[in-house]
Image (cartoon, rainbow over all chains, first blue to last red; front, side, top):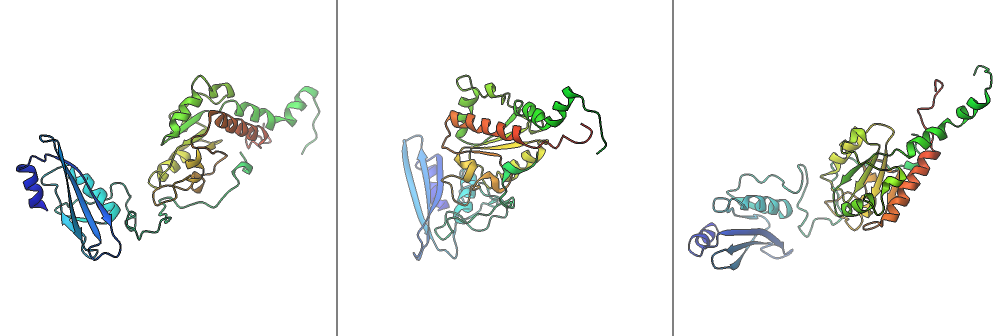
Length: 131
Length: 163
């Protein structure tokens, strides 16, 4: 992937990195599809690159060395799908928070599971409290 | 209680002190807008001239929670934002009231997922809920008036033996 993106950048002038995201196909042998989007401001052309990875080892190449802006999007993709990026050593949560378990955009994440940072208080009839 | 002489004019004041303080407090609400999402537009509409919460004594947003006594939570609060909201609430001095403005602050609305808080009453006490996505300005004004009624009716802890 790194070599392909390098060629796209240097030979075909795809100088703008748009996005990296993923698609979860539960049950498929290669469960995750990692999708990169590039744009060429010279030729006004977009290109989309898809690659499949296994659930047991969801690792793809990081493009931080080619495009600095890839860092944030790789962090987001790691938050949401748990894809790891080889070469990006800063995969701290960016949209989620420290301590969040799991990856919410995976299909097997329970839809209504909440992981509160502040413990919930018991219900109170607020209007009746003393001032 | 020790026996004391009754003075007619003062006696009225001593028996209705709660009401007096409530009357004063209900017309001096200083809101702190905790604005996170699209309901902000509606908050601007209801504070600006056409609807004008100033007419009801709930004017002059204070942009420091320490100077405010009405926390208006306007918009969706996420799990990640919950500690910030709690800190703002804790910084406010008593007496303080909380209004949940819009359906997201009230119950989470249509957000039932990993990211958003299902109603701010999960972390702080709420005095008045204004549902709607977004609420009409009339609904907000109604909420303010209901809160004012509550304040007027309420017991005010400032009342004690020395006052």
